[in-house]
Image 1 (cartoon, one colour):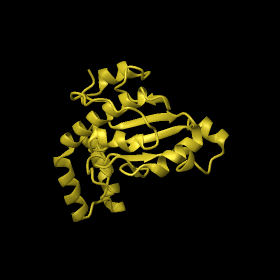
Image 2 (cartoon, one colour; image 1 turned 120 degrees about the vertical axis):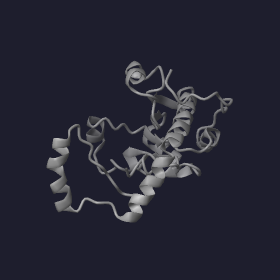
Image 3 (tube, one colour; image 1 turned 90 degrees about the vertical axis):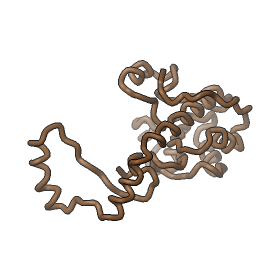
Image 4 (cartoon, one colour; image 1 turned 180 degrees about the horizontal axis):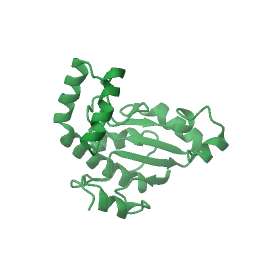
Length: 200
């Protein structure tokens, strides 16, 4: 509920979903004892965000697909991981079990650690942050941020390469996000595409 359900990065919340009433009955006394209840304002903000959830996800997925295609063809990008791309190792699984490819993109920059730092220090539209699921596009470089205190060997063991950039795509115009990246990664921007929100 903190992420996409609220969608505006102004609430901390969560929920427990159970398959049976019996399990819910077991958990409820624990929830009451621990005080697991949203305050009224957080509940209001979450309910407000829920009303626009389908619209936000559709728009962000559309932008994410366009950005993934742009990055995949970019000469300074080493690799891209996005379930909507045919190059993703689990693309067929995503088509089978998902209604859309999601809003998260991972990609690797040629140039590794220094290239990642340069990109994050240069973007103006994309927000430097480690969250996800909001209306703003967020970008982060794990090797110099969330995983910076780990040794290079520990990062590699955890699957965090020095070139990894993590993107949580928001609802901005995809061409504006591409133009923001193009400040550091010059490339011809692709023409506008038709809606690509649903994996086909």
